[in-house]
Length: 476
Ligand code: C2O
Ligand code: CU
Image (cartoon, rainbow, N blue to C red; front, side, top):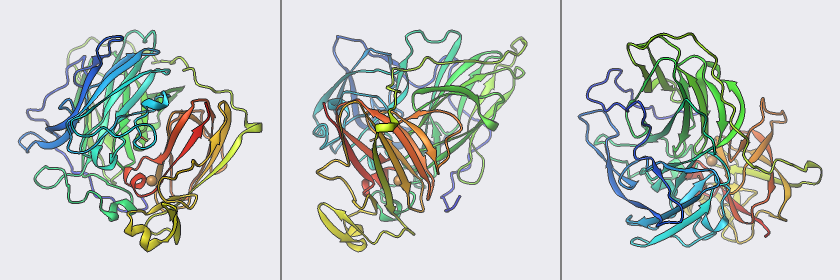
């Protein structure tokens, strides 16, 4: 890594008294969302979580319905989500449905699509989901604090005919910054050191809120493993240390199935990957899930085979997910070409930028909590970066002229990555979040077919708060 990261805590290799996840269960309380009935209440409020090994104190968190990750919301493709957010937090909040090509009024962005929901108040989110896949929800007000405190959950949209005989299992990965007392390090919230560097990098990694997640599996079973990173800023480097892992979807959108080399997958904040596993090792085997971004191998979870299953001959796993109804008909010839230049941060060369309508030098920018700019502007603006006629193809040339990686997220649309540093990617993927390494250039394209006001921002949440954010408009 080009910069030093605080190390993740090394966890015990052996278990003692840890809850094992049951064979059939992934995350707590998979809730189905009934249509045309009362909204499902989702309460944001204080809670407690056992993030550390047994015997260590519980951590005071913010959570949905008292659990972090929040309840898994499951819905069928094309169905309606009907959720009443109840705010029991001491500050305003909203819910953004990350990756859903949603009705703009339901996108959950304060000041742009709705008023933030004040403490004690509620807001009804009601929308249909056009795409099947793995999505997530999180606050969009002070998300750098609210997500870091544990507010997030998965929204899983099932295919109309889910593949048979494949167990569905979801993992939410997060790195927490905890003090010695096991509590969230609150003193560092809003610290310019994080905001102008990598962002808030945690020191404790959890999968599904657990120190070491154990997943019991049966010999010869298949699993669709949905991975989601809810880290504020760390780019996770996960290894599924089991042979034959295949990648089948990214950011909720199917990809041509492909083998993951050494089970390695990099997940930037907000990104998701769906994998297919076939558990063909001997009964009694174990296979670790590790994370290596801190320069050491941290075991975060493991598959544990049932000890006595009958061995069956190995067959090749295969899962081709049906395509979603994305507008894939890119008209590159007459596209609206947009440049998006990212500058700033520590060791950058940003001397000045516009902020709230004024040109400011770097000192006064930092004084205002700003450290990053897009096209010379720090933070949100009255006017959009661009306005598109509905149906127009847009290309965006993103240039990361900084010394830090950034995960750029577009709301309301999925885009195709056309080029990285001028070279086409290895395989086609439709994404809602794309990682740019330092000094990297990425070219993307999408059809702006969803009317409304949509954010573009870095999903390193401290970077977003410190200026790396803008928006675009699609005419009705
Ligand atoms: Cu997942 Cu605008 O965020
Ligand atoms: Cu960033």
